[in-house]
Length: 180
Image (cartoon, rainbow, N blue to C red; front, side, top):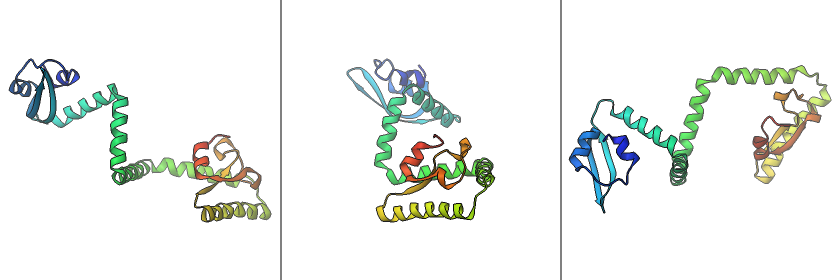
């Protein structure tokens, strides 16, 4: 019986002794409690050189089979370790940005290029500036963050002109995305 087979059927009757299971699974330390003929593992450490890779492969396989249980565990951990979870998210986002910097630069340049495509008079530039000032003012007054949103998104060919701008909350803007 290998470790993955053993763990796949946690509640199988205890057929082997603790030493036999540890030897068969390549585990140096294992605590097994037998309750009414049911074996449960609570702690293990891999012996073999590729043990970390085996453990990670087993974990990925388990997560794939049990997405609901993984989601419950992750939510419980996140609620208990909020600051650590936020920091992990920040690190992940920074690493993704660093890895894909060229993609982000390209998207920014495309967006800026679309903004420049549309001819804009001085009055329209002033009106655009006032929209952004309104968003900042509302954020300060209410404490809720506001964004200037393009009604027809730039990604969908919308212009960066006053008639295509609206001031909405951050939550609304982020949920809207590039939709009209």
